[in-house]
Every structure is written in structure tokens, then in C-alpha cells.
Image 1 (cartoon, helix red, strand yellow):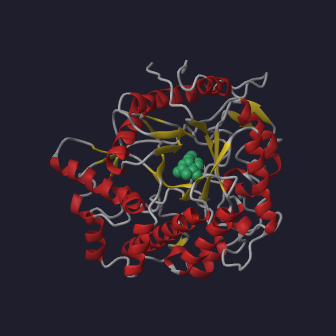
Image 2 (spheres, rainbow, N blue to C red):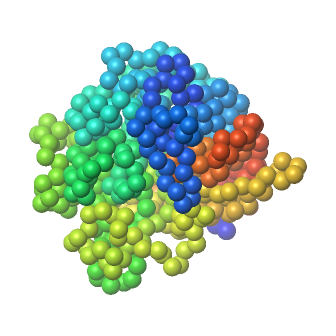
Length: 481
Ligand code: BG6
């Protein structure tokens, strides 16, 4: 297996999001977020989004793994693995419970003071996402999420408060988690979880139009936040965050290749705007032809140019394969409809294709396109774990997945010259799955005793992968065995 030492200062660690582990959903003044109205699903049954909290339903994010009260113990375990960085989000509703409040909630701000101080105590650098699928529910109901231009101001106010408060304790920021993860909607969802758009009763065309408008406002909000952040602390590194999945044609036919190109254009435009400060031709043309995104001003275009990001953060889980048998290139709108199964790849228990080399391809592609430092801020395998009678957990499948991906990452850095800031695999401690709401879809090096039904005593224990990852970090990536 190929391995290489990563550059000095390489940020090894892990990534989580507030709503997926903190719990304490209505404690110390926290308001209700979109994640608080999502029920538990399964590998085959999607989560339900309810109109408010309905008694008797199981909302797993309400208590999650209660990181809110266990963070000292959890960060200590991450420090034991040698973490250099810990990515989390600031729950918007802890700071602005309704999203449109005039004043922030001091108790929420204080929680993150303490969390970041704990990280620094162990020499761990916090990496913070401002909005990670946890938009205040009030902003969804009252304004229809980011379809409303007012949301720009609410987000920038939230970002400004965070930048000022954590000016000296956080250096690495990201504005919106997986901003591109909203163009392929799940029909069963009531609300687009990224931008908070209520999708009920909208036609396919109306959904797409709403998405382009909302994403535009999010991009303007992000650019304004980048500008404000750099003023508050010029040493801030503020990045974007996309879900990156290299796209492949199922066959070598021109129709499949063109479809793969078009698919990639409709996914990459979000980061194009973040990095270049302008819309790419294909998407601008597509939007105009369809009459989408009616509201874009000259001032917006200036803001986008002025608020470009410092680095490109991305999650990598799998590649995407598309087939023109499913959708003709010129008829591409709902991206999910073009996706085909790749016959060469194995899948996880949740059907996610496993493709380590895709990570090297992703790193090269993003480097060539953006000429910016990259940051892998999510990667990992969701799997069922078995606890043995003696309490041990032999998760060799997880080690195997991560080892292969890290090896490809190291090739990209060492052989291809990619400028990479760090590697933060998803869910270093078991947490609630964003997609299914399950606890049993586990990513962690640290096991948490809680199952899908919410049973368990929340105790933490080390899986076999814990010691393996500790060794990887200790040798700065050289020893992957
Ligand atoms: C990413 C999200 O899309 O994938 C995370 O940023 C999410 O929030 C992760 O948890 C893994 O997905 P899932 O559905 O397995 O939790």
C-alpha cells in the first residue's frame, strides 16, 4: 500500500456537525432548527420532516449523543488520538433561536467559548462551519428559507457575531456546508434541508427555480460573510464547502460523456461562484433560458467578486456515474434521474459506492480547476458495528476503507503536488446520520452506546480503528498498516 508523510502542519482530525451530536435541542435558550423536526428513518425508509415537533414521534437530533454535556470527555478522547483539528458547526439556533432575533443568545455563545477553549487546551484547532443543515425553523416557516432575500441579512448578522466572538479562538471557517447538496431533491422531503425551502405543492420547474434563487442568495450571503470576516480578522481562512463527487460516463459514448460534463457543470457552479466570484457560462445560460433566479442585482455581482473564498473544503464519499439512457444531456434538470449504478464498484450497506481512487481524481480535478488550497473536511464509511461480549469492536472494514482513501490522498499530495490543508474524516465519534437519522449508521473511531430506537447509556468506548488512526496521525500518514 502506497504511503507518504504529509507536510508539516497537516491538519489530521475529524468532522461533525452541531445538530448531529450536541443534543440539548431546547436547552439554554436554543431555538428549533430544521433538524429538530426530522424523524428517524432507516436504510430503506427516508426521514419524515414534520410541521413542528409532534408528540410521540422519534426526533433523534433532540438528544443525539448529548455532546453538549459530554464534550470535555469527547475532545479528550480525540486528543488521545492526536487530533490536530476538530471540525464542528455552530448551531445557528443556539445563537439566534429564531434566526431573525435582534440580539444573540449569550448562553449559546458561551457554550462555544468553552468548547473551543477545550480544543485549544489539547492543541486542537477548531474548524467551524457556520451553517450545516440546521437553519432556524422559524426562518423556514416565516420566510420560506433562502428563497427570501432577507435571509442574507440574517445569515450575515449571525456570521458577524460569531466572527467577532471567536476572533481569537477560531482561524478556519466555512460558510455553508455542502452548498451544492440541494439541486437533487428527495421527493419525500417537505423542505430542502440546506436552504430551508418548503417544497410541498411545487412543480418540478418551480422547485428548480426556487433552488437557483435560494442558492444565489446563499452565495451572496457567503461572499458578504467572507468580506466581513476578513475585516474582523485578516488572518481568518474562510473557505467554501461542497460535496464533491467526480462524475463518470457509464460508457464511452459521446452522449454519456456529454451528460457527465453537463452533470459536473451543474454541480461545480456553486464552487465556481465561491472561488471565481462569477457564474460559469453553461449555468448562467441554463438559468436564463429557463427564467430561473429572477433576482440578481449588479451589486450582487460585485459582492460575489469581492467575497471569494480562501480555500475549497469538500466532502468526498463516492463518485457518480451517469447514463444518457436515463436522461438525454439537453434534458438534464433533476440530477438524481441521470445517475446509474457503476458496475465496477462495491457498495456500503446504505448503497454508497466505494471508490478510493475517486478521491485522488477529486483532488486533482479541484486543484486544476481552482488553483486553491484544498481541505478534505469529510470522508468515511457508515457501517453497522458489532460489540463483542468483552466490549471490543473489530471494525476492520472501516480501517480498510479509510486506509485506501488516505493512501490515494497521499498519492495526490506526494505524486501529483496537490496543496492539501488536512484530512478530517466524518464522525470520529458515532453520531446521528444526516440522511437517515440513524445512530446505527456509524462512522466513529469512538463508539457511543445508543441505537436507532434511542436506547443505550451513551457511554463511549474505543473501537479498533481508534488505535489505528492514532498511529496514522503519529506517523503523519506514513504508517497506514
Ligand atoms: C454529508 C453531510 O453529506 O454526509 C453530513 O455534510 C452527513 O452532515 C454525511 O452526516 C454522511 O451522511 P449520512 O447520511 O451518512 O449521515
